[in-house]
Length: 593
Image 1 (cartoon, rainbow, N blue to C red):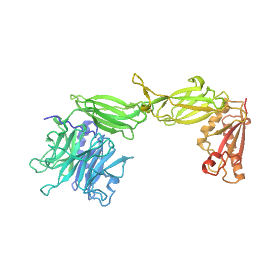
Image 2 (cartoon, one colour):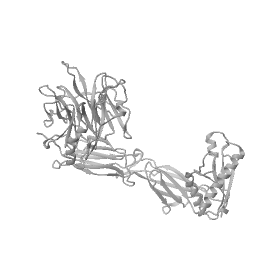
Image 3 (cartoon, helix red, strand yellow):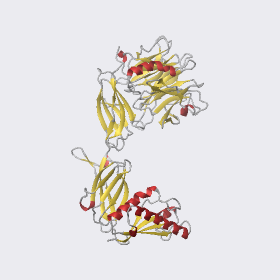
Image 4 (spheres, rainbow, N blue to C red):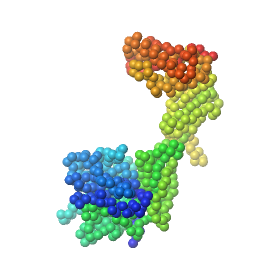
C-alpha cells in the first residue's frame, strides 16, 4: 500500500512513546460515557489538550480535557466562554484548533447567526477563549456550514455544506475558501472530482496543506468510512484511499491524526477512538520543539514561524509561538524545508531542514535564539552656552531590558559618543561631568530600521545612517538654576516618594564631583490653597530633600533649604498643565569654584 503522507501539525512526540501508547489506548474511558455521545476530537500542538463535542449537558457543546502520561486524559470540562454565549443555543460542535493552538474554529447554531448553522472562531487569551466571532460571508450563508478545518498556514479553510439529495438523508459536500492578500476569505469553491461524488463529512487538512482526511459514504451506502486524498500539482485531487486499518462495518467519522503517527483519533459508535497507525501508513519525519528566546537576555520572544517548501517556495505552515515563547513544528520526510522565524526588532532566523525517509519519527528539543537588531546611535554632547563639545560620562540604560552601558573612554572629537543600541527599545541617557557641568538626563527610543530609506552598497550591505541626538549640558556657575526632574511627594504632604531617589542620587553625584559647590534647594507649589499653607508645605519639602542629601554624606553647610510656595510661578495660568509646571524643585548654585 502506498505510504500515507499526512502529518498534521497539531501535536508532538511525547517523551516516552511506550508509556504514551499504553495509556492512550486505555485512558479514553475518562472521556467516553455510556449515556452520551462524544465525537469530533481536535488536539493541540503539543498533543496534551483535546477539545471535542458532546451532548452530556443536554445539547451539543464543547469540552476540553488534558493528557497526563501517568493518569491519562483528565475529566472533561465545558468551554464556558463559548458554550454560554447564547442561552438558547442547542448545538455547538465540529471543533478544529489552528496549528499554533491559539485559535479554535467550530460550527454552531446561534440566534445571531446568518443561517441554519454557521462557522465561528475564538481566540485563546490568557488561557481563556474569547467571545466567538462569526466568520461571515462569503463562507457563511443562509444554509448549513459546519465542521471547519483550518490549514497549518492559516490560509485555507475546508468545511462542509448541506446539499439536498433525492432521499430524506442530509448529505454534505466539501468546500474550500482561501484568504486573499488582505486576509479576507474568498468565495468558496467545491472540492473537485473525485471528491464530492457521494455524501461527505468532516474534512481535515494535514500538515503539508496537501493531504486531506475525510469521511464518505461506504461503497454499499451503508455508512461512512475514512479516506485520504492528496492535492496534485495541477490542482486536482488524487483518487481517495480508504484507511482500512481504522474502517469497519460501523460508521467512522471526524478523524484527527497525531503527527507522531502513533495514533489516529476518530468517532465510532458515539465514542472517541484512538487507534495505532500501522507502519505501512506512516510517513517518517522529525519534530522541533522548544522555545524562541532572545540570545542576549534569554527571555522568550513572540515570533511568526514559516515552514517553506524549498523546491516550490510554497509556505506549508504558518505558526505563532505561544505567549511563553513555546513552539512545535513537524516536518514530513523526503522533503527539503526552509524554516524562517521573524520577530519585530530581531534579525530573521533561517535554517534548512531535511528528514530522511529511513528515520523513524523523532522529536528534537531545540531552543531557537534570535539576535536583536542593533544600530549605532550618536550623542553630541555640548556646552549649552558655548556650543563646544564636552568630555563627559554617558550612562545609557535600556528601560526594556535594564541593561546598562557607561561610556567614558569612547568619546570622539567635539563631544561625540557612539554606542550600539537595540532597535525599537527605549533608553534613558544620563550625562554627568566632573569638570563643572550639571548633570542631565533624557529618554530616547531607537528607531526601527526602515530598509527602504537606506542605501544599498555594491556588496549588498545596507548603508544605514546612524541616528543622532544632541544633548546640551549647562555649565555650573554662580546663580545657575537646575530644575530637578521626577521629584514626587504625596498629595499635600512633604514625604518623598520612592521614585524620587533616582534624581536625588544624581544630585548627590553632582555634589561629590564638585566639592566646592554650595547650593540652595528651592521648592515651589502651584496656586491651589492659601499662601500660608503653600509656603509652609514648600519649606518642609525642601527640608526633606536636604535631609536626604545629608544622609548621603553631603555636608549640611553646603545645603540651604528654601520654600517659595506659589510666589514664583514659571507659568502664570490656572490650567492643570501650567500648575504641573509650577509644582517643581530647583537646585540653585550659590557659589562654586
